[in-house]
Image (cartoon, rainbow, N blue to C red; front, side, top):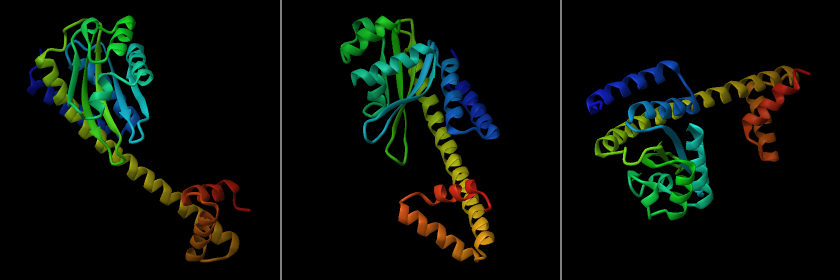
Length: 229
């Protein structure tokens, strides 16, 4: 098995690849899940589970159909190791054998029927909007996630959380720049159309935004879509 030093080196390389590629959050999360399968011994499938502050459960990434089905089961039943890890109650939650698991009886029976024999789930991050996350790996073999595998999984999840936070921040910056450009283009069109200055054009946009209770960027895009006339 790879040592934790080897895994750290591989994760550092992956982090560099993410930064160079300039990936968005969705593609970066997929890359992380795929790398988890390659990194954590015994992992056949992987997924990322998110739980919002309102309790809405989503699976933005699943590598392998069984991983998605497994997450769907937990959403339907309202129980399971992914949800426990995502809630941050424990940073690592694992099941050695679905047939003997008693903490989540309904889930373990259903997962066993799917062919999932073991799981390990790692608390991933808590975002600014209070969304909790978990990185989950699944195996069709019992007892594969031993102490070393779980330790490496924790290390992997810690690195992954940092990279996801970085990518999310970059996404927010790109979105802000796009919004600024959209508003700027709309102001320019209004200035030309009505012969007004920059400040007046901006006041027109904000007034419409407030009156209609629609975001300023959305109003600006409507102006652009309407064309110069």
